[in-house]
Image (cartoon, rainbow over all chains, first blue to last red; front, side):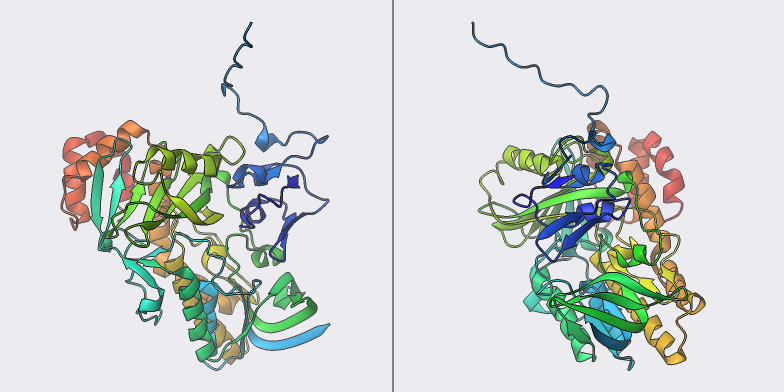
Length: 80
Length: 398
């Protein structure tokens, strides 16, 4: 998982929800993920400001996969 | 490495921690309160609404310094705009006073200091010290320096993201349906009625609610809690609130003075809040009111109970689990029944659709603000027998 520290408000929601205790707030400015992180994605779901996203190149965490049946708005056709 | 010896160590200087430190220190135990931030009370992570009934019990006297506004009542808004007004006395843990938390937290820490507790800022724990299965303090950093703090009794008051309990092997995990992600602005340049704390229910905040707690008639804490299991995408919580604010003429032109985010647990009481040498209080023990998300009252009451037990454990030189169990029993007899009842009520409310909320709040809106529970029930029962049947098992317990 990757944290955008420019967006993060250091609220600690991710730390509390992490089932494997792999997230720490370092001091009051940085969020640290331990290598043992299982990429479950719960932190990305709970993050109220959307500062956490999955690592590119790693499997999409189950909690972040779109729920079955969720509609995606169709893209408008380009003008011909 | 620096070593500090103390009798009672309290991790976290929020309301629960300061309260625990106050009650432990005043009975003569050497008490140390540690706080990871450089300033107690800041940054605020709270909607700042609180009731008044508990204050005498915790020996807190009202001080105009930390009171922003007083609200007589709560208004509950249905999705269609109908509102029901409930007098502060019946409205639960969050209505009565809107606080200045930055000053409130400091005042509680002042009380702890006056009682004799030491305070260390910018000091955080990185693990617990365990000796033969007994927690004997923590290791951590204090102003950048490695430190080992040895204590006979440790109190974990480290909030939602509590680590102390987990390090000591207590199961404090909560399910995604039992956590709300929260986001709040303090909005200026709005119009609000400073006499009321307002709650908006329905699809504007799935599984939770939007609150407007006034700081004055033109500044308010406007925030949202959304049940985590009902979140779908990135930054949904903030998006729900932004969308709602944009739809409200009274708030649309509001400008943010600050931004607060976080999470609150809305779970059943934990099966276990003590382990040898350690007690958990407040949010760390998941003692937030599951229905309202209010945490201050239960944090203060549990903090007081834990502080008392810690002092007695120190006097008896006994920090065994059996001894500390008296804290677990004390908070359970004080609040467990209400926590379970409110948890069940939350489970029901979190899944009501807008239409049902409209009818329910519509029938409440015709009642007197200080109506008793029984007259509320009778009124709802007359109009909506089905709803009463659903709630019956819950209401018998009140």
